[in-house]
Amino acid sequence: MRELVVENQEILMIPQNFKFANRGKVTAVRAGDFTLELDYEPDGILENTYCEFYTQTSHGKLYFDSYAKEINGKTLIIASPAKHKFLQRRQYTRIKYMNDLELFNDGNKFNISTLDISAGGMKLKTSENLNIEKAYDIALPLSDNTIVNCKFEPIRIEKRSEGGYTVSGQFVYNSNQDKMIVTQYCAKRSVEIKNK
Image 1 (cartoon, one colour):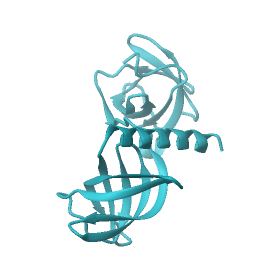
Image 2 (cartoon, rainbow, N blue to C red):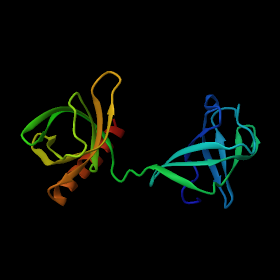
Image 3 (cartoon, rainbow, N blue to C red):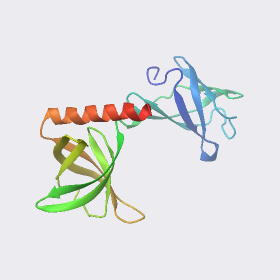
């Protein structure tokens, strides 16, 4: 756990009653516990009562259950959890990518609006009913002179309350070079967005 929770890391703490959710920064890490300095008074957070914790690490979004061994104002000593899990292992940088594009499968065309993209795949919305069992051809415009052609395989399809579907899926590339082009594009755009 010591390499997962580090000093200056931001952590979201959610007790049984989520109305008392709080956020804080790790100020010290020891073998059996760590110190969390909360942003707000710990109303509704009790000693020796389990809470949920969420934080972003280089391995992805980390989730664990633990409790405060001591509460001293906004300073909490949190017991190191026995186990943890990653909610999302983001291997690739994900960025906003808003485009109206088309998917093709067996001579059929499907209109989509992309939401975000990474080298691993993308999320999109569409009014079309995509088949989760099929792979769709797509051309990804990354700049005026760079277009990557690959396949898109839906992994999750959710119905939108306002109509249509939100689809998340993965890319299958024709070459490693294409994958590298998308990886570099996302990393570069991510830096540009941060520096705006």
